[in-house]
Image (tube, rainbow, N blue to C red; front, side, top):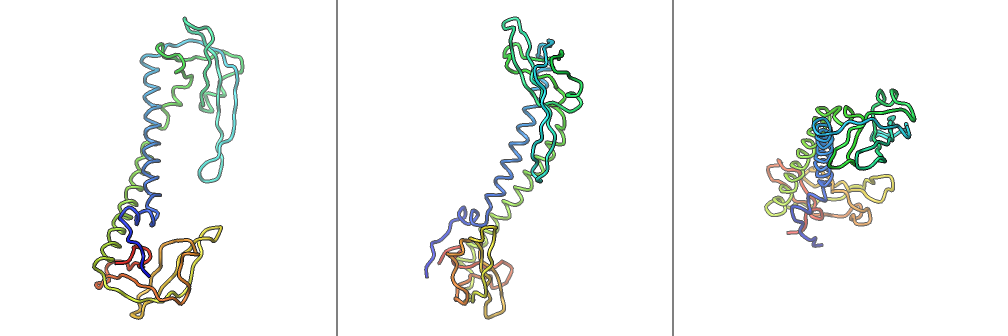
Length: 236
């Protein structure tokens, strides 16, 4: 059976390298978001107009975290006047300490940008809090994603090299291994006559050859590179 040759990008995708790319994007997004908050806080401090507004609503609510738990959030809604408009509204997530210092209907200090009163805030410390820590986390996520992506690229290049120049082995599929909650995908384990063993990449179970089938494996004669199944990388 002949299999279509896979490109470098296609092989990286098959190895779920996209997950590492998402890590890089998430890290960049997190860093950009926090830098934006920090710059906004600095802009309020330097160019903002300070007025006294009124608290119109106070809300505390729970938000789910990535680990499956929850964290408490605090939000304050308020109104304030500018020379151009006596009725301007604002809303901001604030720290617990700031929240507890406010009263519904009470006065609250508001900063707004004179060029754009819709850009306003009441808790400047909240905007800039955890700046260094957040950037460190974002950098860590980006680095982890880059390392993983680099590994996926190296493995994909190695698989392509084996397809083109590696030795050919005939192996037997020993069993299938299902993956995921729905058990619709999985991989197979193979065993070659020279004792080498390995597995295929994850694929729909319906696309895997049956147990007991003979399959072609591309392998490194020096045994430095991990063998790859012909169906995962494509035929010569």
